[in-house]
Length: 180
Ligand code: IMP
Ligand code: MG
Image (tube, rainbow, N blue to C red; front, side, top):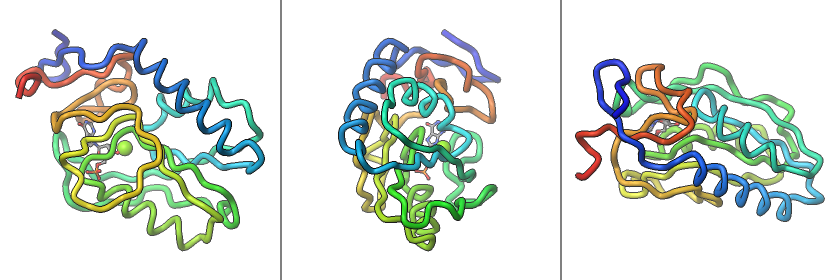
């Protein structure tokens, strides 16, 4: 049991599995983008650990940039997506790989995607470490998923509960939802 603020969490995905799956995704991207000079666009804050882990295994010429949005309030989606750092203009004409920590309702990805398309990239693909597939109500093309998980609140490996818990290397799930 791990206590973060006032909630108890238990381990859901150990770091070894996260590392192995992330390396696999990186290898797929090395192949798919070998001659494409992609720009990885991370969605802050949650993506930072996943993107860093993935980048250890990316072996092709590429760049990285970030956008920052906020949609979650504590343990649920607010239904609104607030843009805190916009899409960089240098994505025009580039092959963009969007990198997310988790896709839940899909609202964040839908909003980032709409803003990104205005900058006219050559192509967009979406990579997410986690996908709460049953919670996603918006039709989205998600090209690479680390793990499909149940519709429970998770933290760790970059994901937070009210700003806390990002530092854990495992993915943890809130304990009163662990068996639901
Ligand atoms: P969506 O807009 O509902 O798809 O939510 C996406 C964003 O909400 C993610 O990028 C996360 O920042 C946050 N989020 C969604 N589910 C969780 C969770 O279980 N734990 C922590 N953050 C979450
Ligand atoms: Mg996020």
